[in-house]
Image 1 (spheres, rainbow, N blue to C red):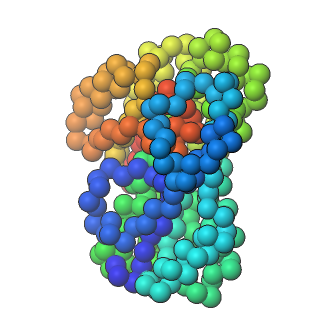
Image 2: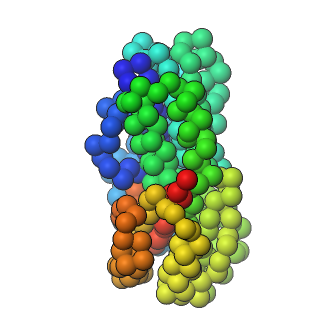
Length: 282
């Protein structure tokens, strides 16, 4: 794999830290803006210390590297690798894909660059990156890897349930009056991704209702390759245990992983979030 490297962004989460080819995977960080102050690479911010609502004016933002920074990054990797595959979080969620796309046009004479919009986030991206790295470690060429990743993207399903509707407003996914009313009424929307865009698919009355929907969603699949759960802070701690037990009982042979939210995901959806990522079988 020495002639190929893989770039991804800091919202990505892996199911196995030491997966084949991991030494050629590079993480592109986000800066984080809170209350108008910029924290380089989010340094000093812990996701689980974020407030439950943004209505106090913290205005959280993810700031992706600009195209000039990306160009320098591509230039650096061109000196070591003969091909760059970049798999980023959905372009509908963060600005990182579009910044990389602009830089890739300018850097195309430096090194071949394959850009892939994962249309998902977190563990969903991580599963794609791990797959690409493993294929490269086995000597597969960039085109074959790209084709396999693009075939896999439609088989990834991500559900997000959040109590932090004001975070959705700050990220540009919800109007402010809806966010205010939703938080006052303790609404729990369940969101999925349609071609990378957030799409509401259920309104749970309570946490138990959201959990029941997750379980019903799982029952629609005949063959699964991986199930992952994203764990936020209260009120979802107990529910994660229930979901874990359900998965172990109903899908004992399917690989299962649990992950705490990371900072970029918490900035987008709020710390009071629970999520589930499913990779469907062939």
